[in-house]
Length: 255
Image 1 (cartoon, rainbow, N blue to C red):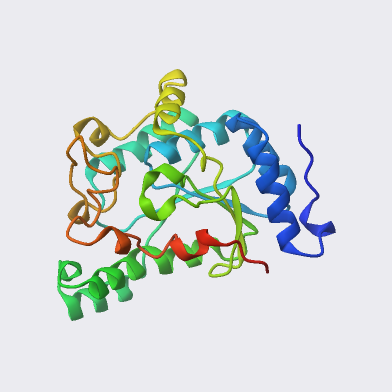
Image 2 (cartoon, rainbow, N blue to C red):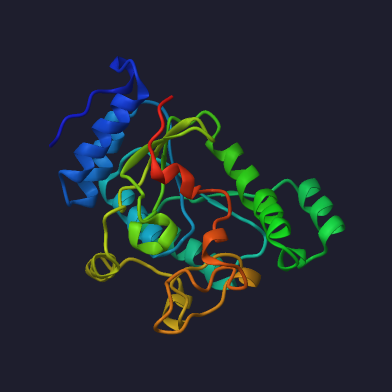
């Protein structure tokens, strides 16, 4: 297994990020990538799962390897019933708990009072304000004190994610962000899920490759981009909720 210098002996976070990036690129095995991440980063490592195909594959690897990772999901209050079923199915299959992180009730009440229950469709600013209350602020609480953050980002997912690295220092959340599936194709992801009998959201079979909140997600046509069903009324360049900034993918940043 490739060795990585632990963070406590590294004078610059850039060195550790570069070491993780190189080590993950040197192996194709997802389980080994998870072990490498755990070995490299002391302290709390979190995994924020959206219960999509990518995140279900990562969850399977976490359960298989037994690595110590805090698994949580953002309960926005507007999920599809099928997404909630996926949480229950996954907990039963893997014998672990997926921690639910909800927005502050007062923040949601203020948002709805100001913009209306579906005000996110009125403007990009209103939609981002909804994502901020229901996703970004809860994520900040969930990531507080963590050293590492594992995601299911892939370069193939959209035009704004083509430069996603294996590892980067996220200055917004002040931690190391790791994307162990960055180089995976959809074909490889599907093969892993089939080979390991990974539980998946029933909506995937109904034309929903990318699943977010129910009012903001639709099925896609066969020729469309896999994230075309997310906030479909917006231009592709604006289709991020604030959890993953495309600007940070263009260049890695040091601490």
